[in-house]
Length: 71
Image 1 (spheres, rainbow, N blue to C red):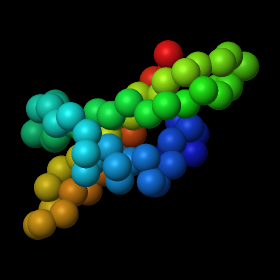
Image 2 (image 1 turned 30 degrees about the vertical axis):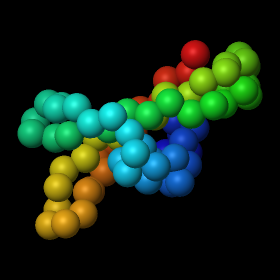
Image 3 (image 1 turned 180 degrees about the horizontal axis):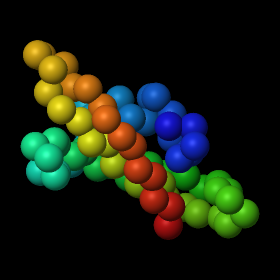
Image 4 (image 1 turned 90 degrees about the vertical axis):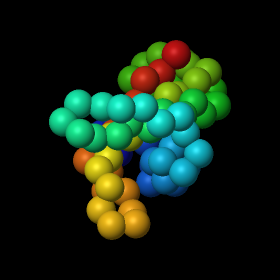
């Protein structure tokens, strides 16, 4: 998560409150936009979009990977 600029709290919020969509390999994707108003890799951005790809494990979600987009 740190390599992509996301926090555990953002990933949890994305899975809990984000838009849900079908993903490859039987996984489920979750997407949520966050106010960012900061710098990432030398550029300023106002919004960070977090996508978490997960599988259901019993009653819980196991997040496999996280992607962050800045705009």
